[in-house]
Amino acid sequence: MTDYTKDGVPLDDTSRGGGGGGGGDRNGNGESATINNPGDDYDVEAARNKEDGSLDSRHEALSRMRTAQSITMSPELFEKLYLSPERAVKGNLRQTFANPTPLAILSHAVCACPLGCDLMGLRGAGQFGAASTGAYVFIGGLLLVISGIFEFFLGNTFSFVVFCSFGGFWLSFAGTLIPAFNSVGAYSPTGDSQVLGLTTRGFQASFAFYLTFWCVLVMVLLICSLRTNVAFFLLFVCLEATFLCLTIAYFSTADGKYLLGQNIVKAGGGCLLTCGLVGFYIFIVLMLVAVDFPFLLPVGDLSHLMKGYQQKHGPIKVH
Image (cartoon, rainbow, N blue to C red; front, side, top):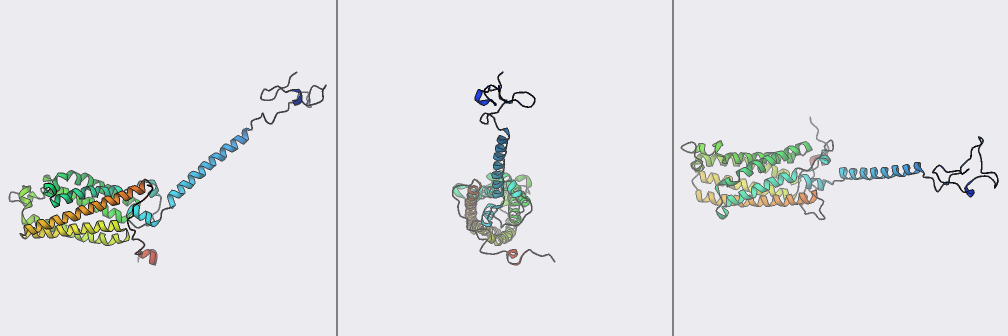
């Protein structure tokens, strides 16, 4: 009788137990006892342990990656990404959602550059850039407001205020150009002529007052931007110069100084074009960081030059 291993392999004489005439070793029940060859047996338990160990290693590697992504962000990198000094915010929304800052900067730059060219009258452009009214609504206005809302949920107060306020500016500026609002035509003798309304003293002075208080707002934002970086600070410097030039220009035009007003409008257009170009530079910087490009462009971090109140005195106490 031939004995077999549990794998179905016949045992030869050397693999059988017992002496030469005993027909192999038998157990207490008289049954043949087979001897398994350790080389032929497949250790299932060891394989499972090896597989579990491999899975644990992969999970550990993924855990290290998630940890690194969630905590290794220097204040300089945070300020470069969000154009705002880092603040302690509960939760991990900044690691869950995309950074809305590049979209906001792009939408502003895309509207600021052509309007600057229009105000300068390059190649016959003009009329307040009315050809780009749709862009002012859907790019400058809508995208900036959406970006600002996302900054709100990420806890970036400064970026939230900047983006939403300028989104409102582009929407209001577009509304001035849309005939259905009759913002300009209301000043005309007929009450509905856009062309005649633009030349009236009432419109010129009223629009100048609107720009005046934008000068005040931008000055506040300019001061606050000293805690961010040089590029963002220069963007607000150009914006402040733009609003200041346009304010003076429209007050001058309202007083009958048309030639002076036109020249100052062109100067304001140049400042706005520069502002848009700085915005494009910031956008490029943010996109290089977003795709982890092999090299990054500088923005000139300012956060370490002027320490915040909480850095000096601790958390603000409300009395």
